[in-house]
Image (cartoon, rainbow, N blue to C red; front, side, top):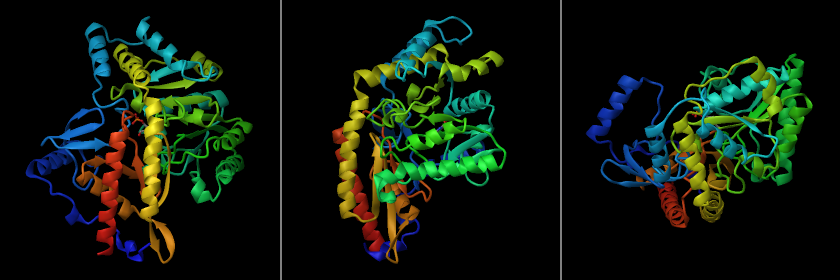
Amino acid sequence: MNSSLGMINAFDPSAASALDADEKEMIARRQRVLGPSYRLFYQHPVHIVRGEGVWLYDKAGRKYLDAYNNVPSVGHCHPHVVQAVARQMAVLNTHTRYIGDEVLDYAERLIATFPAVLDQVMFTCTGSEANDLALRVAKNATGGTGIIVTRLAYHGITETVSGISPSLGANSPLGPHVYLVDAPFSPAQAGAAEKVGPRFADGVRTALAQMEADGVKPAALIFDTIFSSDGVFADPPGFIAEAIAAVRAKGGLFITDEVQPGFGRTGEAFWGFLRHGIEPDIVTMGKPMGNGYPVAAMVARHEVLADFGARSRYFNTFGGSSAAMAAAAAVLDVIESEKLQDNSLKTGRMIQDGLRDLASRYPIISDVRGAGLFIGVEIAKNADGRLEPSSGIAAAIVNGLRERGVLISASGPSANVLKIRPPLPFGRAEATLFLDLLDDTLKWVVRIATA
Ligand SMILES: Cc1ncc(COP(=O)(O)O)c(C=O)c1O
């Protein structure tokens, strides 16, 4: 690799298209009324006005290939979901304190996608609420308070779940009794696939030993089975089992956060944890569940829920409402009728093959990993003969793709892992276009880096 690639530290601003007057004014309005907490994607943010399938359109009518958004997982504005919600809103939209078919029909259908032991569901509106509830349930069931999370986990925004979301950074402190474990290595980083599971389990055992030394009883190990904010780690299937056994041996539960990998995205299975052949105690889900309609849930074993339910009343005003259930049922219809899990597997494999081919031509790609349509591409530069993560090059690629009409993002400890996670109808034609435009972007990045 050309060592002068090490000179890219930040995206070259001259390479980004310029903001027009309207865009400048809208960004100023955002700062005025939304305050300082919000962040925009891309050096030149995109003003999207319409979406359809895997495409987004800006106000000038330019189309962008969406290779990033997992919430509209069955495609932006899918007519079957839109019509199901509109129909339900016109008839009835009420809550779970009345007997209703919508919530019962959907609950039975959702539970049927799980192993038989996971047999009860509670509805929320967001993934954050589902994780917050899961922590309350786990603490109640175990009598413990210790929680183990991965070093760059993200589980949501409430006081409690931001306290188990170290990816939010130093200004968002960890909660009490929260213990960190390193994210797994990929097989390439570990040197051998067999080393991935034991190394991850060692980290969990160390956290458990620290808990014991601190006099803290474990409640749960929680992670997202695709490790999306840690940098995308999927393989080898089954590698998480040893860590889960370690936490159970000390009386803790395993909560799998399926907000990212759930609903067919990883291709080989409907749920990320099923790829690993394990049975969790609690599962949380959200984002793709309603294709943009806010609906989320927590599924658990009845024995885990029994005491919590006996002692505490649960009512969530909008969670499980008739319209939310109509949206969620329509999403399941489309995943089934359009065979989107299978498409995720096939298109995902095609993209990973194409990315490995690019990696053989562009040494700045140091690892390609993922499952189905959840793919991570690690970007590194050569620093004195060593490979070093490069957020600068990754940002240049993300912004360069945006200029070419393709939307992705980056994650991982050094923000150097390209995150490719399109709506599930992403097909062969879109995959080919994506790979061609990435090739073109990589060519450009290498050119500016070596100029
Ligand atoms: C893994 C994971 N868990 C939980 C959440 C929180 O979900 P929500 O934004 O719906 O509260 C997110 C959101 O990005 C997530 O990625």
